[in-house]
Each structure stands twice: as structure tokens, then as C-alpha cells.
Amino acid sequence: MSRRRHLLLGRLPMLGLAAWLALAWLAGCRSAAAHGPRPPGRLRVDFMDVGQGDAALVMSPAGKTVLIDGGLAEAGDTVVAFLRGRGIDILDLVFLTHRHADHLGGLLAVVDKHGTRMFLDAPYPHEIQEYNRLLILLDQRQVPVRQAERGRSIDLGAGARMTMLGPPEPPITNSRSDVNANSVVSRIDFGKVGILFAADAEAQTERWLLDSQANLRAAVLKVPHHGSRYSSTPKFLQAVQPLVAVVSVGAGNEYHHPDAQTLERLARMGTRVFRTDLDGPITIESDGGKIEVFVQGRKEVFQVP
Image 1 (tube, rainbow, N blue to C red):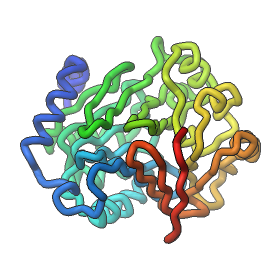
Image 2 (image 1 turned 90 degrees about the vertical axis):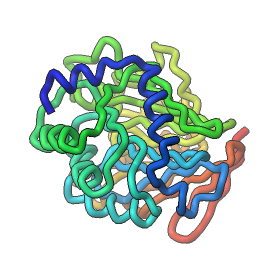
Image 3 (image 1 turned 180 degrees about the vertical axis):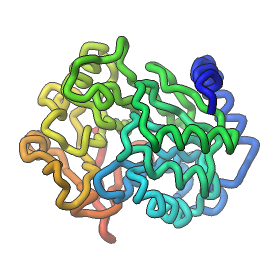
Image 4 (image 1 turned 60 degrees about the vertical axis):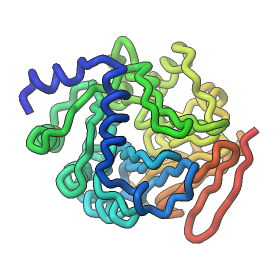
């Protein structure tokens, strides 16, 4: 894709994204809603086990599908197989939180073998080979590309809504990792249930979110940066007050994620922690009033106050 086309697509108005996505979905290309096992009127989020990376599949109560990140390139086949297992032919939206390989690598296989009606890109630059290859593939498949913008809101149907809380404005600079620090944090709301996807946000991002007075309270937290010691600060966790926390992390990873202090802070809050390295794929379903977590053939239920 030419840089000019990419930038022009990224500047389309906020309303345009929601309207385009709604029209594409109503146009009715087949999706998991047509033949998937999701109970009607429920929100489902699958946190896939992709090793040391992130990949989460959202299916709204109306059947719209959003893939948030795709893990490393070697996880691509795992993500594709998972989507097929959920009966998905084409995704409604693929959303990249930031341009690190452990979040975008697997998206090449997803776009190649499943396709998506729209791609929502993280704006902070990080030119790596996998990202450039992904842009070329999106251009070849004529997938519309938009840039994530703070405040952008996407109607997922049947009362579910996705909101971009970032990227930070102005961008965070001179941090430990500017790409991580400028990750696009987002949330999905359905009834009383909020799910906060904290990407690889670090302490500076958390401070910015707190200063921006964003709505951080959420029943479910996708723990930032794989549970790294560089994030999940006490003030941030106090603002979120999660009942359930999900750590997407690889077994025996070289970074020693998740950090013991992060787990201790979550434990002190009474948060139930699930980890993909220990629990495998983690599925969360909600009717808007309670949360059901499915791992390894068992179910745990949490009532949202």
C-alpha cells in the first residue's frame, strides 16, 4: 500500500468508520453469527493461547466479529484454526493495538486466509518487515484501512460498543518503549459489563489514561504488557477495579512475565487471575449482568455489582 493511500484512509472521519462497518456487516457476508455456537444476545471474548503475544476474538451480541491483535507470525496458523473452529469465514474488523511483532505477526495469515472488512491500525510508527508485508497484503486484498483515534466509538450491535481510549495525545516520547507506551487501549461495554483491553500499555500510558479522566472501571482487564513489571501500577488497578484479569503470556518466556509484583497487586484487590500459559485459551461470555469464564472445561461465574 502506498503511504499516501494509507494516510488518506487513516484520516477519514470518526462517523465514517462506524457507518462503514455497519453497512458492511448488514451487507451480510457470512460470519460466525450465521452458524457459530455463541448463545444469542451474549457478548463473547476468546483470549487465545498464542504464546508470548496477544490475540483476542470478540463476538458481539449481534454477531459482529473483531480480532484484536494476532500474536507472533508463528501463531498465525493457531489463530486461523481458532477462527475456523468458531465458524468464522470473514472478520468484520481487525484491530492492531501497536506495531510490535508479537501482536501483528499472525495477522498476515489471518488476512490471507480469512480476510476482514476493515483494518484499524495503530498510528504510532514502527517500521518492521512484518508490518510492511501486512500493509502490502491489505492493499492487495483491497481492505479499507483506518487509524485508531482517541474517542472513536464503534457500535457492535445489540447494545455493545467499543471505544478507543487512546492513543495518547500527544504521543508519549523518551519512555522505556515508545511503541508500547503509545499502544491503543480500548474498552467494550455491554450492559453493566466493561472489558478493558490494555494492550502493552506501560506506566506512562496508565498515568496518561488517569489524567485524561477516561472511564477505566471494568469488570474484566486484559492485563497490560503480559503482566510486565513496567505496568499495572497500583493507581491504575485501583481505577479499573477488575473482578477478572486475563494475562496473555507464553510459558517459560525469557521476560519472566507475568511479574510477581503484578500478580500480588491483583491478588490484594481480590481479582481472579487467568493466564494463557497455565489455563490455555480463556473464553469470557456475558449477558450484560454477569461474567462467565470458561477454561479447561470448567466454568466460573462472577456477578457484576
